[in-house]
Image (tube, rainbow, N blue to C red):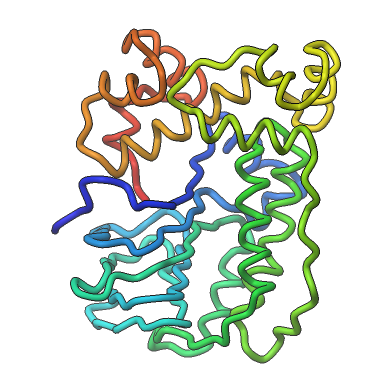
Length: 293
């Protein structure tokens, strides 16, 4: 099956570290329903996946532009704009984008002790047909809000918030209950500005003083405010963002590990591998082998 050799321009995705996943799976506010992987793929040419034994989690894929397809229970289904489909856990499936009209998708993997109830809530027929939904700006805003908080995974409060919002997001795909409410955008602030700057400079090395200057604060004050909001030191969080970019490159490109290291500013691939393993709980090589999204 053809796969995209490079990532998709404008894509976003987040993979949570192994140890954090263990904490989420046993957290009293998350264990019933939680996200394991999440992302957004615009104009995803050559995007395709096949899992002969299925995925450990349920998978939701929401197409907003273009077209795609999926096979489930030996039945092929075509996916068009404003349609969503859910693939049950542990069931063989494959899916992909249309060759001439690539889809743009929002996707996530979810699980938890009560996740099957949401699967039944969304799939109210036995044919697993795609569900047609009306496009709602609030739904997109809610997804972006969830993904943005998952990206702040050094802050367990943000993870709890994201997973607490998951049930509402899933419920928007049941046409019988969706009643959108306005979602206010978050105002910019110095910490947000520096996080945006970090994301735009993943191939560089940034100092605490440089980030503090962008925030318009002294280094000590900036560090204290950042720790209070993110529950991580600024440079540690920047390292986490770098490793998330490495995850995307390992999954979506054929770059060698040392080339991935160079892409995110590590001249020493061995040092990169140690940092990656420390953050993600597995080596870059094993991550590439085990990656399931």
